[in-house]
Length: 465
Image (cartoon, rainbow, N blue to C red; front, side, top):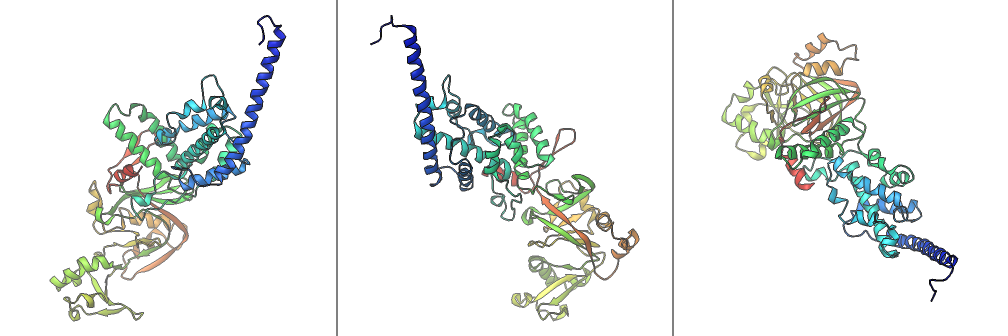
């Protein structure tokens, strides 16, 4: 036992020895954690960690030779906490990434992380992995979304190429980690503008139902931007279904916009992207089988003059030729016989496609087109078509698309729209078309335009979010 009368130098020596032992212990546990991390990372994913996230966790630690990233660096641990707390800025639930006890583990009061966990290598290993998985989970959801759009509509596919989250997190841990989410989020200015609008609405969430609804709607639309490709093309066409609106945009700015009619709720216009390649003047309308079977054939059976009155002709399928069939020879009571027939509406004023259509190859046989029913554009809700998109100003779109083709001046376009024969004109360069579903859109003044959830996708997405 050392008496209190011992020289002060002995106390100093003891303190130095104790401190040295503590440092040695800390170094030893870091080595142990590195070994344990390698063993854990090469194994199966912990419960609750998604496969895509776990793959990034593995790659992250491989780039670090399995050295821990957070438990031995209190500044990095504090930065990780700040990043996780930013989840609500992106419309994402904080509790999905930051559990209540994690801040206390990463920022213990007056202790180091290792000391707080009593230099237990197992606990420290699990904590380091837990933080990494939480960050990469948040990064994944900010970058490409928390929800799979096909769960809302099986035809709706994500189109953004995921960034290399493991490599970017490894890079940003050696710099300013606070900027990492900004580096992986969608770069579209609309995303950043919706974030600002969400920040304005979020402090009031919960105080009034209307504010809560506004914040929820913005969050859902932020998610949809994560499904969009980074590069929409310097020139592209955007059809926003809930807004019943189409815009041609150059460098992100609208240069032509117009009202549109979209599919009925039971014939929803699919959400997809495809390159527009062709303008067809005075088009035939090849009646889809579903419409022919459910509408055209029954109408022709009831009324012998229906086909002539609507300028519709019947073709025999197969054989490689368009053999026209006399309606009087058709047995309308024979369902199997009717399957060998196709219906086609000839060009003209009554044609369902109007005077021009715009083709973009896609598996849904959806295109943009004119319509003879102009009065329908005066309605507020315009979910009225069988799935294709009807345009309020189709001639203006044709002029825009053919503006670089000197052969096609305004007079020639107008004439081609009134002729009796169908004519195809290939575009000099394809124009990307995006049919999208945004119920909230940022305005230049900082506000947000919003529209009704015409297909119920907001509700479905909120349930899956």
